[in-house]
Amino acid sequence: APPKDDKKHAAWWRAARTIAAYRDRYQVTDNRNPLGPAAESTSQKIDAARARVALNRARSITSDNPTKNQVRPNAVTRSAPRL
Image (tube, rainbow, N blue to C red):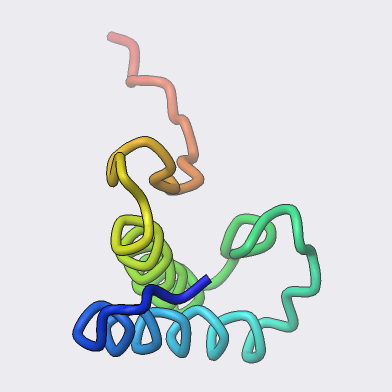
Protein backbone atom coordinates (compact mmCIF):
# COMPACT_ATOMS: atom_id res chain seq x y z
CA ALA A 1 0.00 0.00 0.00
CA PRO A 2 1.28 3.50 -0.75
CA PRO A 3 2.46 5.57 2.22
CA LYS A 4 0.42 8.52 3.50
CA ASP A 5 3.30 11.03 3.55
CA ASP A 6 3.15 13.13 0.35
CA LYS A 7 6.85 12.88 -0.54
CA LYS A 8 7.00 9.14 0.12
CA HIS A 9 3.71 8.65 -1.72
CA ALA A 10 5.08 10.37 -4.84
CA ALA A 11 8.30 8.32 -4.74
CA TRP A 12 6.33 5.11 -4.22
CA TRP A 13 4.11 5.88 -7.23
CA ARG A 14 7.14 6.55 -9.45
CA ALA A 15 8.54 3.16 -8.49
CA ALA A 16 5.15 1.47 -8.94
CA ARG A 17 4.80 2.91 -12.46
CA THR A 18 8.22 1.52 -13.43
CA ILE A 19 7.24 -1.93 -12.15
CA ALA A 20 3.86 -1.78 -13.89
CA ALA A 21 5.48 -0.76 -17.18
CA TYR A 22 7.91 -3.69 -16.97
CA ARG A 23 5.11 -6.15 -16.18
CA ASP A 24 3.02 -4.79 -19.05
CA ARG A 25 5.85 -4.81 -21.59
CA TYR A 26 6.92 -8.38 -20.80
CA GLN A 27 3.40 -9.66 -20.09
CA VAL A 28 4.16 -10.74 -16.52
CA THR A 29 0.99 -12.10 -14.93
CA ASP A 30 2.51 -14.05 -12.03
CA ASN A 31 1.45 -12.42 -8.75
CA ARG A 32 3.89 -14.45 -6.64
CA ASN A 33 6.95 -13.11 -8.48
CA PRO A 34 6.47 -9.40 -9.29
CA LEU A 35 9.08 -9.40 -12.06
CA GLY A 36 8.22 -12.79 -13.53
CA PRO A 37 10.73 -15.32 -14.84
CA ALA A 38 14.38 -14.56 -15.50
CA ALA A 39 15.00 -12.08 -18.30
CA GLU A 40 16.04 -13.54 -21.64
CA SER A 41 17.23 -10.78 -23.96
CA THR A 42 19.77 -8.08 -23.24
CA SER A 43 17.14 -5.33 -23.36
CA GLN A 44 14.89 -7.29 -21.00
CA LYS A 45 17.80 -7.76 -18.59
CA ILE A 46 18.36 -4.00 -18.55
CA ASP A 47 14.64 -3.36 -18.02
CA ALA A 48 14.51 -6.04 -15.32
CA ALA A 49 17.38 -4.38 -13.47
CA ARG A 50 15.51 -1.05 -13.53
CA ALA A 51 12.31 -2.73 -12.37
CA ARG A 52 14.19 -4.55 -9.59
CA VAL A 53 15.62 -1.24 -8.33
CA ALA A 54 12.12 0.28 -8.43
CA LEU A 55 10.66 -2.71 -6.56
CA ASN A 56 13.34 -2.47 -3.87
CA ARG A 57 12.75 1.28 -3.63
CA ALA A 58 8.97 0.85 -3.26
CA ARG A 59 9.44 -1.81 -0.61
CA SER A 60 11.98 0.27 1.31
CA ILE A 61 9.66 3.29 1.30
CA THR A 62 6.88 1.29 2.95
CA SER A 63 8.97 -0.97 5.18
CA ASP A 64 10.32 -0.54 8.67
CA ASN A 65 13.31 -2.72 7.68
CA PRO A 66 14.28 -1.57 4.13
CA THR A 67 16.83 -4.30 3.39
CA LYS A 68 14.72 -7.25 4.57
CA ASN A 69 12.54 -7.68 1.46
CA GLN A 70 14.93 -6.68 -1.31
CA VAL A 71 14.70 -8.61 -4.57
CA ARG A 72 17.98 -10.02 -5.80
CA PRO A 73 18.73 -10.50 -9.49
CA ASN A 74 18.32 -13.90 -11.09
CA ALA A 75 21.95 -14.83 -11.60
CA VAL A 76 23.33 -17.25 -14.11
CA THR A 77 26.12 -19.27 -12.59
CA ARG A 78 29.11 -20.13 -14.69
CA SER A 79 31.98 -22.33 -13.74
CA ALA A 80 35.46 -20.91 -13.90
CA PRO A 81 37.73 -22.05 -16.70
CA ARG A 82 40.00 -24.93 -15.81
CA LEU A 83 43.65 -25.00 -16.63
